[in-house]
Length: 339
Image (tube, rainbow, N blue to C red; front, top):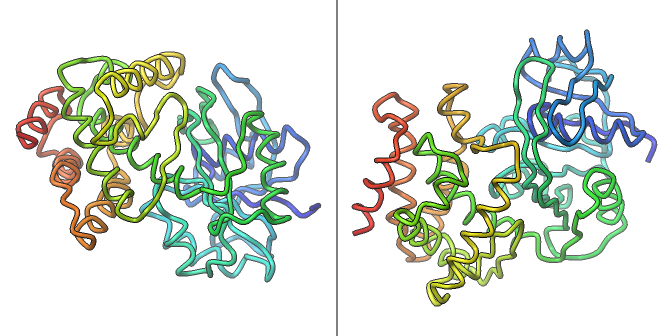
């Protein structure tokens, strides 16, 4: 295709993807609701810092209300809890035969499909490290899994085109017939990251701490049971193997997966999760209601209890509201809830 790629949400994920597409020779247009970020990109370009590469790429950037025209390819890269609002805003800009790639965390494909139509949605799983630093600046901190797939698992010309595009960003990108397996695998991993974000310790340090592996394992079991109840076969990525966190998994397998996640995260320049960054640095709401709460709600509808996931939601809200400090002791509280 020769039409521009529209990146809706030019923060950590969207900025990194868009910059890499530009470096590969594609025309990209950014949309973001942060006026200072849009102004900085238009004035100086988007700067990518970090160990993967450093560059300044030029592209047009718009506030949502400024955008005109329709586009065949739209990457939606906003925070999960902003998905519905963004999907409604971009709907007039989607070409009749166009599609939206949900490069986000969570089960946002379902949210987008309810607004745009399932036939216009492509599933996407990303696990690379990136952070928004300041207006016009994004930090690309580490390689990670990139997976795309049609929601129904079919191989179509458009998914092959998107896969070819993603290979230009990540040479190890995967085209899958089981995108839901990756998304639910990420929900299990994401629940663990929310656990690490209760503390000021790094992801690797929390995963390496033997005192907290039992409660994190039980948290992972809860999410895995909800996936299993829907007959979803979860997929492994970046040292995380959901099967190692199944209730029937041998303890040695679980320990091995923890060890591999420690190794993966120690190699990344991104030491803490974006969740922790929202809480500790940016002082804003996290994606907990769009990532963990749906697991609790789906679990309730299926008769699968998720008390630790529900406790995580409550604790994150308390931190967001300034009622609970970030502290390793929070994991002790979670462990007591498990007991």
